[in-house]
Every structure is written in structure tokens, then in C-alpha cells.
Length: 300
Image (cartoon, rainbow, N blue to C red):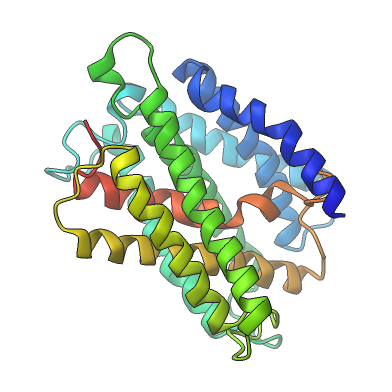
């Protein structure tokens, strides 16, 4: 299993690098849309649907939502809104911002579901609710990646997406650091169980993951030339992203337990499905972009 994971990761690394740093924004948007389509198919399985035709129909519905945001919004270069973060003007042209803000609210619901998880809970197991959460969060995943990727592009004006790609990579590093820290610290020192959703996760592991994320976040200030004046606020946001990363993973685990499946898919040998690898990213990405852009930490 570990060998398969390493081989898959080594195969995907150059592809990820090319997509983040070299693919033009329109093609990048198309790639993320395709990724969301397959993630939506897996989400349909987590909702408890067995019919493959329904999985495809649900994935088409999510894709249409993403395409609608793309079609009715301002140019990709102005996502999430020309007035953000100085002003919020809710209108049809500000659909990307509306989607991001809606996902932030829904993440609170997901957080509550994890905290109150019981096998006999019924209220959140309604198909329609889980499907709506999936549509909203996957559309926000689509929007947030475009928002991050185009950051600094209007100033560069030469098709250079290096900074936007670096911002996405930095987000991944925060998530990976949290995951790695939680795993190793939890394995060595974990005693206090975190939740019934995942018996292997401990509070000691979460603390270890947050420490690792702090280290990555601190080095990111100079590496990305982030305009951080208030270090305390910055570290609080990094801690928040670490916590969201943990609970994003736990929420998918809750869905899998309810649907009685081990992995969301088998598209990635040794890793499982796309949602198994990107569950934390779905939760973190909108909050990462909203918080960093709101405090104007991006070097633009």
C-alpha cells in the first residue's frame, strides 16, 4: 500500500507542477472543472446512492453549477468580485463571492455534524441535505482555485501564473503539514480520542498537526513575500486552517461511515478516491482564500 502511494505521488507531482505554474487560466479552469466532475461522482456515492447513472447525473448537475458561475460572473481575472475585499456587493456578477461565503456557512454545519456524530443520528442523513452540501462545497472548491490561481495576474499581464500557483501550493503544504504532524505525533503520544467519527484521531495528534502547520505558515511569510503586519492574527488564521483541515477529513469520514464504504473511489492507486485525498482541501480552500485576501496578505 505504501509503495503504491509513493509511486502514485511521484507520478502526479510533475503533472501538478505543470498545472499550477504553466497552464493558462482558461485551460486551468477546465481542468478544475473536470476534477470537480469526478469528485461529484464520488460525493454521490457518499450520499448513499448506488446507481452509477445517478452518480453521473449528480456530477453533471454540479458541473452545470460551476459553469453557471463561470458564465454569469465577471471575467476570471476579477474573481471573486471587483470590489472584494473592500466592499461586498451582492449581485449576479458577484456569484463567485456568494459561493465562497455560502460555503463558509455550510462548513459550520459540517463542523456541527462531526461534533454531534452518532450512528443513529437521522436529521443530516437526508439525501437532499448531503447533496446540497456537496453541490455548494464542490462549486466553492472550483471557485476558490480559480480565485487563487489568477491572483497577481492582472498586475503581471504576461500570462505569468507563478505567484497564483505558489499560493495554491502553499495551501497544500499547510494541509499536508497538519496531516503529517497529526499522524506522527498522534502515533507516538496520542491518548485522548478526538471524536467517534475516527477512533484513530487524537487531541495530541491535532496539536502536533497545528505545530507543523505553524512552522510551514511562518516560513511562508518570507517565501511568498506575504504582507503580514499582525503576526498574531496570521497565526490564528493558520491555526483555523489546520482545524478546518482536520474536520474536513472527519466530515468525509462521517459520510463514508454512513454510506458504509471504505474509500470514496479507486481512481488513485494506494490512495483511494479523489475525495479521500482532497477532503481537507475542499474545506480549507474557500477559507484560505477569503481570509488571506480579506487581510490583504497576498503580495499584490
